[in-house]
Length: 225
Image (tube, rainbow, N blue to C red; front, top):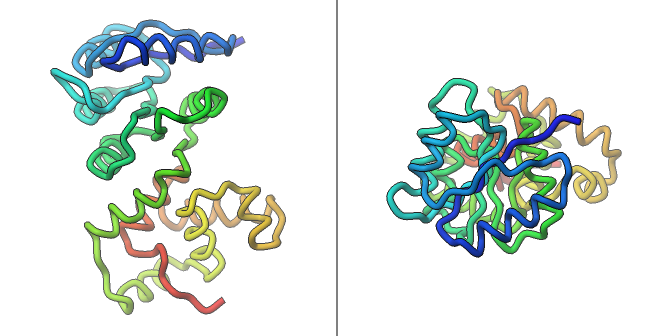
């Protein structure tokens, strides 16, 4: 059985212990170490084989955003799963831009934390639905396009009205099953649309699609259905 080697990074001892206890419930996950700042995380990843880093964001010496950037700059770097008490765009957008593959808030259920670790390890994004709207708002505030520019961009990318609709539902935190129910189409059809969206936006996963689509101004654009 392949094990996922995890490094826990948090400046609060209680949080480190709690996360260690949660991870111990999954036999496929092994906690290699827990450290209390980003610099120690960078050094540990440099000297050890790590699959996933559970990264707090607000820490002394080196914060989680800078640590993520440093770790992801290395070849064959581990996946980074940010897990923090903050859903503020002050942290959310920068850590995703730095290379994190997921973003969870600390009140996430233990089973969802476990699932998120497996997801980012497999190259799939994991993001708390509760922060999706914050992500959209944050990027929209930084990137503004006129309506005509956006419509031209949608045409240039070859996105269909249905694909734009699915992007908007993705921005609201809906998963494939929820999108299929909302649109009254099969889950397989949703997956097909999602694959086409990823290809057209030249991204690998949901988080990248959400960041890219919002940066381009594609989210929440009125479309004729």
